[in-house]
Image 1 (cartoon, rainbow over the protein chains, first blue to last red):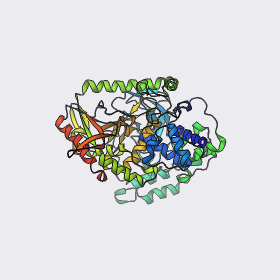
Image 2 (image 1 turned 60 degrees about the vertical axis):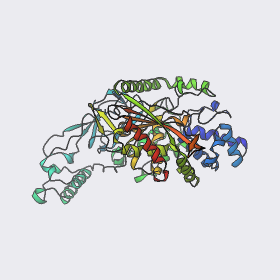
Image 3 (image 1 turned 60 degrees about the horizontal axis):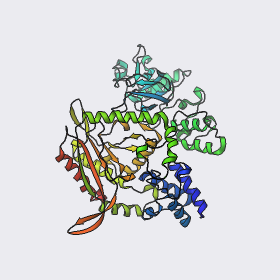
Image 4 (image 1 turned 180 degrees about the vertical axis):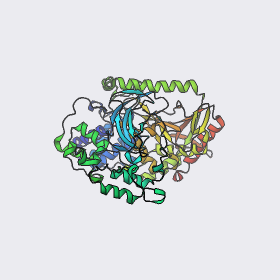
Length: 80
Length: 476
């Protein structure tokens, strides 16, 4: 999957899990937990949503790599 | 207007889930009520037919104020007496009047009479001692074909809905309250939909499909229940990226966040004034728990993965069962231990609010059940769809701020509860064990407890039980 498709999928998934987060908040460096305030249940739903929309299943051991918006986009692009 | 929590003084009816003429049973959801904290569905305390609403949508009334009149159905009435009205939600459910006829009327027959629209008071019973039988009711129903049948009672797991009477009353479509709400939001006409739910009921999915198919129109003006879309309070906002962008939404949150703040503030002030808190902390060794969870999650699809909170909550519920001084209510000057563990879970709402609804009988749930219910509860809390019992029932509450990075949290007890458990962040720590230094996952657990009910010794026992239980995660 190319970078742009991955970014679109990630933005859509975050929008679904945390409707209050605005597109302007989704800088690559934004941390999902601390900056976007997703808790562990939100994060789980996010992983689930991305698996559903892109087919990319993120195993738990890879969670550290997807802690930021940019990291998540990279991951989805590389595995999708 | 029932009380939906110790701190609630008034509530606002924001939606009726039934309509006049609907038949409701005890426990059926009848209205959505907005408290200062959140929107909750409330149930009927009576069985009967909704005669009229006594308050309008948008009215705020004190706890104890009658909001609807529910009358007994003809089949429930003693013969020759006028219908006695019973008012929902302003009193404890009163027993059914011991009428001569009713005493001889087994519930299944009464139910049949009700659904066939037969007034048993007018029947001559052919059973033992003049009791009315099924056959009597059926005969009476057959003898008067002009009688309009009363709609059959809805299945207990469904909200009563006038639509169940179908074409008889204006051809309304059977639908769930959620579906109706969504339909209104999306501007979807339920009449035109063919439902895929039980008995052709229009479901949430049907409405969403229809809305997606293009018949969607923008909702006219603000919906009664604005989507939860607001910023967290400034104090909780991260210092990093995004803080500025959130300010606008904070203002948009407007009065709701403010009244929520006040409600939480009033309750916490009362707690600190009345409850002599004492505080304990211990470090939980989560090596075994995290390793077990990682291996369990390894073989699972995302949807059924566990989070550390699920293990912590389950261990807390089991420990609360074993140390009863932590679980229950302090009311009328004395402690009343809970007969079950209803574990309150503090949920931060996205508008900065805080609610702590209960996972019922948390000690008896398997980890998977608990996880599923936790996700459901948090989703509904954020969507403002909690039920009365969930708000009123918690016997002990857990706050888990660890998700957002703090190491420990000392909570304020929710009156009339007597204990609050706090969990900090799960993190790797240097850990001395058998004379060796290693790295382990660990988290700080804290206890705020009521000194009128327990002392540090019992509190310490409770916290160390949580740690012990987490050493055998496969048994949780």
